Image (cartoon, rainbow, N blue to C red):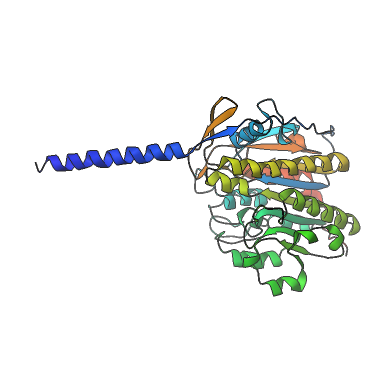
Length: 389
């Protein structure tokens, strides 16, 4: 009897675990209605491989793997629908591992784009042994460029922070906020009011906190603009700006300032931050809603490239989140299942349009994107200069 009890308890425990895992698996299955929206064709032009871009736009879909894009495509318009991202002329693939892990977090991934080095998860634009590495905005500031950032998260969150902050923890957001105020970033739009000393912000920045003030008419005369539209990440509502609205405003500001101040060009990074958050929650409906905003931002940026003819647009993701699988369809619904609530090491897409876009093809490391951006503008051969006031 004494020998029997442990086996009996083991069977009970094993049964409970199987039941728990089964329930977890069932909770991660979702059924999404297949959409029927028509494709909106986007005009593109062909650029000579010899032409150098003046400006760089880097759009990030946080957590957006190929299956997040595929599910969004099907949910919007069906399997034959084409998103804006699908119409980007050049496609590649990026590996995403960090210095110390097979999977990356947003901090290490964004640091790879910003600085060209692999670092530890949670580190921002410092090496694994905590040496500061200059980011793209810091490098090109001395080449006559101005820079801007947009995020639907806090502007102190991991991805935007990598382009101005150098710190050993992405979670030190009050310190990161102070570093933003000392950085070369000319316009920053996102959330994160609670991380800033507002009186300090107002010393050298025009602060905007209301969507009604998100118009370049209100601040083209300002040297630096900081838009903070929520306490932390931006809650989606008609009273809050979208990624599309903020990115459009940032582009208008940077274009005007670049021309007015005789700059060599501008750099803008804009992130659809909350695609990732929805994937962490295994919430496909919210993920698609966030992706729609991201794809509309892509369409607007593509139109900008076509009209401007001097701008290189690059789109990628820091990592895939959720291990999303698309399993089948039945009666107008597509069945999807999430594999995890965490990041995965699945490679992500890279997309490019504009002068220099042909270089962003094939398999690359995420650090290569940093090098390719600087090579595209021939940064090493630009004489030191600053934009005139």
